[in-house]
Amino acid sequence: MSDGKKITGGCLCGAVRYEVSQTPDEDIGYCHCRMCQKALGGLFGCFVIFTGAEKANTFQFILGAPKLYKSSARAERGFCAECGTPLLFRDSKAIAVTLGSLDHPEEFPPKSHSGIESQVPWLTIDNGLPRWKTVDDPYVIRAEKPAHKNGK
Amino acid sequence: MSTPYNGQCLCGSIKYEVDEIEPRMGHCHCSMCRKFHGSAFATLGEAKADKFRWIQGEELLVSYKAGNGTVRRFCEVCGSSMTFAASDDTGELIEFSLGTLDSEISLRPDAHIYVGSKARWFDIHDDLPQYENGRPSTKE
Image (cartoon, rainbow over all chains, first blue to last red):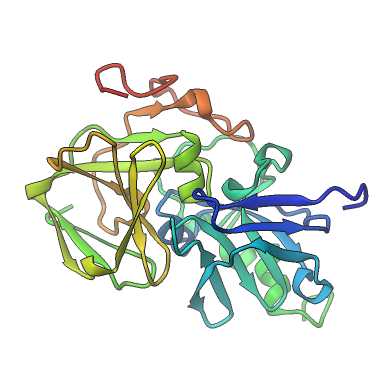
């Protein structure tokens, strides 16, 4: 981060701790996709994304390391093998940490809802944030069309 | 919405069936549930133990017992958060993560609990009753 302050987080039992020394992407958001619901066992996921963190070496585990599960062809998810806390989502472009695992989640309010095609119909979240389906998700579009700024 | 209801973890290693879900279904905002689910809150369904069965992969459930005696279980392979048990759990009821349920159900969550620990970045947008701690009728 520009002020030199690191973003830190970790799991419920404390076995895995991480720190990030880069500013997160703008699109902090809720993800209502079915895989996030399953991975977190909840009604939605919430992620803070750090694009390029792997390459820039700005993300590191300062204690322990998560167990990884390859959840799709392009991504894997990490969780604490001791207490099960879902910690991160990682693909070739970015590392995204679960908002709930951050030490100070209140500093990163979500700005959007993605994966709304799978949103649980009776979940009431009426906060006026932009909503898009997975196919229209800017992050997914960036990940799938990395080389062309204009999309085509 | 025929029974039994079915659920499974993200990777499908663990599967369960539920014959009947109890009407008490809460959103838990306590700090431990927020960590264990990595999210804003947990939503847990309850079933009597004889109405709930693991039909595959029960041996893959890993238990994490917290300092306050609560026990949370997750899938060893993919990390899906699966169950919660209070420190004074008698085994008569099982609380399972609603996000892992695949079947449609007609029941809906009926309360927000431990709102005193709620994430400040999440605002509640429904009219369900909110309790600072656990439900008034339950032991804490």
